Image (cartoon, rainbow, N blue to C red; front, side):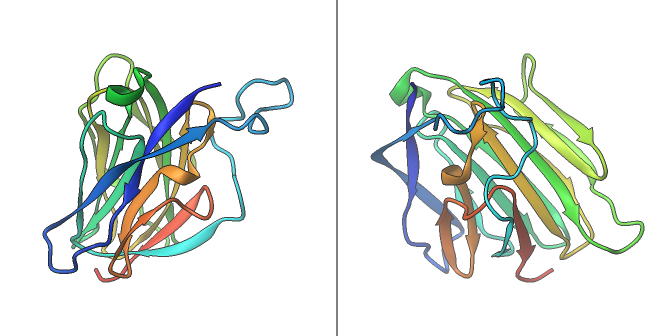
Length: 198
């Protein structure tokens, strides 16, 4: 059974240009009940808890220290620009992280799509691929680097994010700034994030 350090949030300084997170001494366990019927990992895109909604603040950034903690970091910038990154705790655990993060558009407006998708720090077998009906999936094997991707939506569009870490729901490892605070952990996986302003 693997143990991992995860990153712990600290209070968000409202006027700061970027939020930071701290590493704690807490560890995570890949729970044995998060497997498929055959004992293997569950399907690549699945629900872990009742989907919930939350606000994501506009133009707030999160500083990430590569290799110091496991996390999926989500940011939104004015005009419909999203930024999703993943990191691992390899420096502390000597383990790698296999991430799968799926983002889909939450809208009933015809014609809206996710656009201008660009991978970031990808290497080897890392990839960002399209998934139906209107989403993209990051598959990244991460150690002491930061992998991710950026994409655009209509200004103010909400997105649903589902994250999987080493075959398990990654609910403890979500980070985003919402309602003036740095959030660590999601009440559900997936979670829908709606920008506070355009």
